[in-house]
Length: 304
Image 1: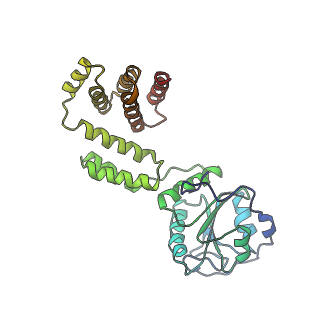
Image 2: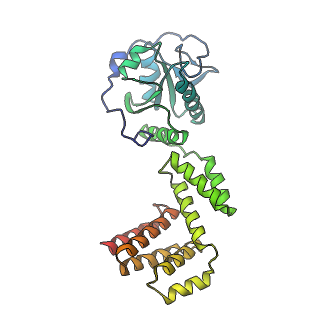
């Protein structure tokens, strides 16, 4: 699991000893609605949603340690009145509601619970920890984009053995609609925006690659282009265009074979151009595609 900001995690497993915070759980909790952005009273969130709890030293054993034995617990350290904390807390709360009980959001007010913050080595807020099976497994500090936060939570759930469907990003629908309507500029902008938040998003990567193919084949006559490639097997530009047309025509395996063969026959900059073009076509189908896996092996053989 990694920090959602694509940096090394600030948490080293075993660095936080939660055992010193274990204590008897209270017989009851005080009702009330915590201030937005900073939990304060040790009670479940308003409305009785026990997937969100406000933690104190008295309840950390039951609300974090014991709960984490059954499902992942995301511990949010914040405080009311701090802008970043106030803005980030509702995002976590909304994602928790979408999770429909698959994980617990445990909110800690660092001003009212400084000892908990000290034990977790909280140096700034907001800060978020994931606890699974009674042990912290990852953490990050500061505000991160929602798309990356979603990916991080998915990783936390997987670490906790929870099987959940990957959430759909509504921005992908908008980008796909723009691509299908032929608005390539809008589609490219939309896909790049998604990738700025989530560089590993396979769907956005595939969409951006399709934009590239659509631009390259614009205005080309398929029959003429394929005939030109047939008559000039070592013409790099002609072969790349033919491969694009074949991919759009549902003949991806044929396109891959065409470019692997061209890699074998070229060298230097031409070979690298062909290789990069082929890899971009792979991204449209995705890494789990059988034809892509076969073509990747063929490409490796051609290169080495």
